[in-house]
Image (cartoon, rainbow, N blue to C red; front, side):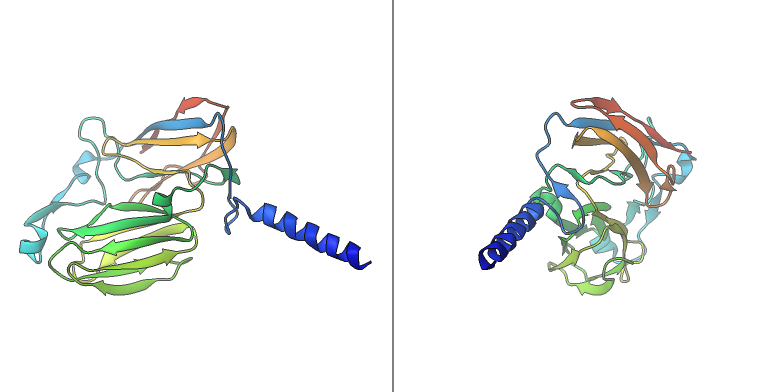
Length: 245
């Protein structure tokens, strides 16, 4: 009886360990993806271009911050209307490619009184290193629901590190320089992308299957609240464009 008990315990432990290998604490399992599919395209801004790429005067600390700046909240290519800093992601996927070290620990700098980058992606459970490359104090205020909110100063030339455990969009501002703002996107899976200056995005190494794609922007919200359903086959490259109207 004792031998049987030990065998059951050993078998259970082995099964538990096997289940934990490659699995995140948040329901996503990492695995090797062979013949992964690619989804790519362009996200466009279909609104009034007069509201995009707005240049504004800097009201404070011009020596450190510069005399003027382009507001980062809404930027689009003047020719193609490609929308910058939109987030394109798979709403739910149980298993897929491995997280990269760059997704688990990222840096977010403050330069000339702007957050660089305006949208930063980090994995669930990952860390963001907040740097201050300016010669003035910045005070970072993070508005969060699923993660711990904070409001802390970062001195000139200093940095601080914060961990983000749960998937959500976290809004950042600076109480010293109120025009500063940015977004941290805590990813539930590695299949997230931020659009380029031309509005381009690419999601790669996706296992074949049916998925819901969400496109979300800080100022414009979502293209479609329910998202767009797509089906991807092994090794397929599919192009899918989106437009905020």
